[in-house]
Length: 418
Image (cartoon, rainbow, N blue to C red; front, side, top):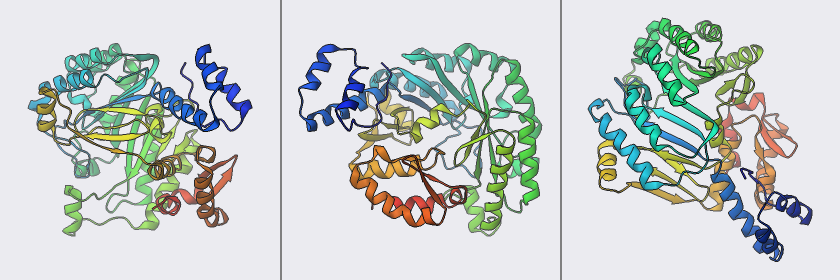
């Protein structure tokens, strides 16, 4: 069926409109005999069923040749575990067996391009029920891109590549402990184009120690010269436990001041929009028709399945996460057990999740998906920010204005329920 209801029917007319898309006549007849409260519960279930049919599959590949100084994601340099880990990924997919009409697949890390084509082929054998037009993304380091590897990825059905360019300044790349140089980013994009890839994304960073606004403008222009379909950009973060944070604590580096960070953010936004990119999420820009479908599913609250060490899954009612230890993960799967924790999401948590993910997008928060109590609370707390032109209310959607984008965390914290 593939239809996502998204909201509950508010009246008899809407119920009949939705029933018209339900092909099972017996089911339609039974629904029509129910009381209103029972109908509400039925549509709760239908929402879950239809949403699962929109599921995304995330596969975490935690291997890196070397760690970048800023990275707080779960990763390992234990490359000798790759073969056992791929076996475990395949086994976890067998154990869980919950995939249904996969619309997007995302191989993230770590560095998924540290796997061999043979290992990736084994993974794809275990991925089934994939829609014909599925978006299939792999993250790659620019220095891992070769003509042979790119061609073989195409054969596997991979149709989108996301590369961590970060900066086009070789000195800053060395500071980050990146393995590639600026020239290799250009070479990688050209190689991927020659292999037939029509959907390429790159990541950029700004806010380096001692970086100037002119430095950042030069990076933006070089990124635009690549003519890629998608650009994600983030300010350099000093996450506790990373080597970069230790440098900060030791006084060896300093963060850029907030005003310069703000100027860098809006310079990026203005320049990319002028170049034809759509600013569709706080940190993401795309050519028309090239939004990241997989990441968009996160922001839209669509269920997803996470496979691998530290991978998260979400099915509307619960959120779960695999153990963040590759050896324990492998051992557990080899023994037929998925080692994970989970939480049941109550109404307050679901509301807070909706606020903090939907407001990241240009469409904003659809107030019709909230209960009347939630709408009242949300709008009451949003009003002062609407008056200050930090939030806007249009067509029953609450969204960030340009002025509100840079302080989005503060605005979201004012709207959530504690």
